[in-house]
Amino acid sequence: RGWTRDFHNHYLYYFEAAPWRALVEANASKQAFGDVGMEVEVRVMQAQAALTLAALGEPAQALPEAREAMASLEHTESQLQAAYVRTRLTLILTRSSDPEHWSEAQGIATERLQGATRNPLRQGLANLVLGRVLLARREVREAEDPARLACELLSSLRTYLVPARTLL
Image (cartoon, rainbow, N blue to C red):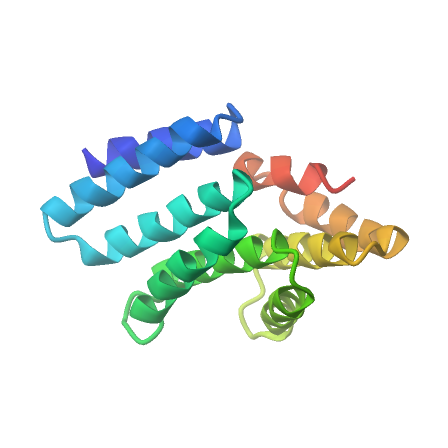
C-alpha cells in the first residue's frame, strides 16, 4: 500500500499539478510504511509531503518536517534515501522568502556540484536549485545558465525535467 500511494503522490505532484491530492497520498503512504515498520520510507515520504506543502505555499510549515526527516537519516546507512531527502529539503529552501534559506540551498547545491559523485541527476538538481535561488534573488539573467544546464542534464528524467523547464 505504501508504494502504491507513493507512486500516486509522485504522479499527482509532478504530472497532474494536483498538490492537495498529492499531499493526501504522501501522508497515506507515510502511514502505510509506518504501519509495517519501514521507518526509512516513512522519512522519505515525510520529506515528499513537506515538498508538497511547500508547493502549496507553506514552506514555513514544510521546512521543519523536511529538516526532521533529514536529521533522522543523515547518520544512517540509507545514503540513497538521505540524498533524496536532502534534495527535497534543498528544493523547499528555494521556495522560502528568507534569504538565509536561499544561501543554505545554494551552499548545499554548490557542495553537490563539487562533490566526488558526479551524475546527471545530482548535477541537474543542483543546477535547478541554483537557478531557483538566483530567481528568488531577482537575478533573472544569471539564472538562465543553471536553468538551461538543469534542463540538459535532466532531459532523460521527465519527473525532474518539468520543474527545470519552469525556470526557463
